[in-house]
Image 1: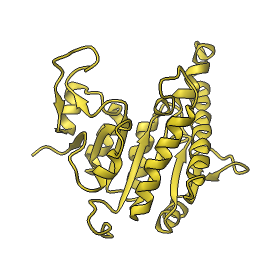
Image 2: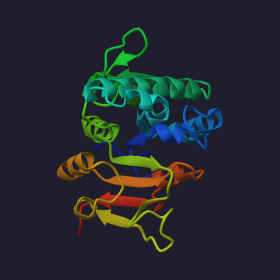
Image 3: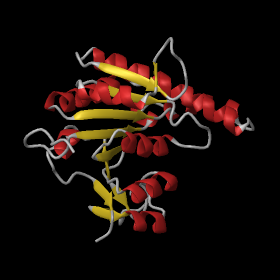
Length: 244
């Protein structure tokens, strides 16, 4: 395994970014201010020398068309959602390039005139050359979430950790928006997440991370500097790993 840059905890990370994170306080779509802030956070990561890949969701776009998808064939609806992730990936690519960062988008669906197809070895070369790689279109298969895609891609590229960006500052035993006494975990095991069905990632992705020993850190994307803090080894958010 290649060593992390001096003073940092990781050599290569995969950031799972939900489509909803791009909305800000909007009902749906992409909030330009939020997109710029996320791009600046990722630029700070790239500037450290840490290799970074991103898996992005599409809920912010698909939410706007979801009423029309009611009663639709599940495979068709899922493919629509995959295309929404490609739109988000292109928006994030543009924002990063405006920050002077080299970026490549790779899609699990073949859209060669717009983005590269997902090729593992090509993705690794991009990362080794200091480019951020954005993985779009999930796994390319219906019935699988972008959480599962994040776990899968992290293992394929040999990431040290999955960083799950959310709107809350970690994993709680119950919804902190509804319960004032909700307790945040600093650390929780895969088994406990599965047993208690804690809101981290979907169960399939957690089981995959457990089987491969891939740690997951859940943190708030709205907290400035949180990504750099994690790279520096700070105990930000909640880490999901094997039990003691």
